[in-house]
Image (cartoon, rainbow, N blue to C red; front, side, top):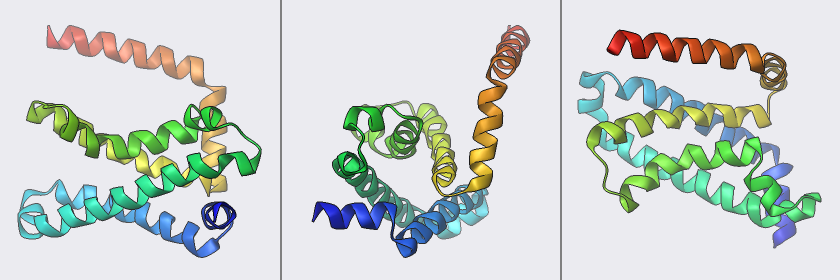
Length: 158
C-alpha cells in the first residue's frame, strides 16, 4: 500500500496534474472571492471548494510524510524542507481558527497564506525551480530590501 501511495504522489502524472489544477483553482477562487458581489453570490461554493481542497492537500501532505522514506529521505528532513513547510503553511490557515480563537482580522490575514499553495507548483514546474534558484542567489539583497520596506512602513504608520 505504501508503494502505491508513493507512486500516486511522485509518479502518477494524472494525480500530479490534478494537484496542479487544484492549486490553480484555489488561486482563482481566492481572487474571485475577494470581490464582494462574487463572494456573496457563490460563498457556498467557495466554502465547499476550500474544504475539498484542504482535505486533498492534507491527505497529500500526510501521504508524503508517510512515504518519504521510500524516496531515501528522513521524515524530519521532509517536514522541515522548503516543500514540507510550504505544504504545511498552505493548509494551516484552515485549521488554526478551529484550534485557537482568533480575531477575525487575523483570520483574514491567515487566509492570505493560502496563496502559498501556488508555491506547491514549484515541485512540478521547471520555471518555478528557476525562480527558486534566482531567489536563493539574491537572498541577501531581498532581505535587505524587505527590512528597509518594513522600516519605511513602520515610520509611515507612526
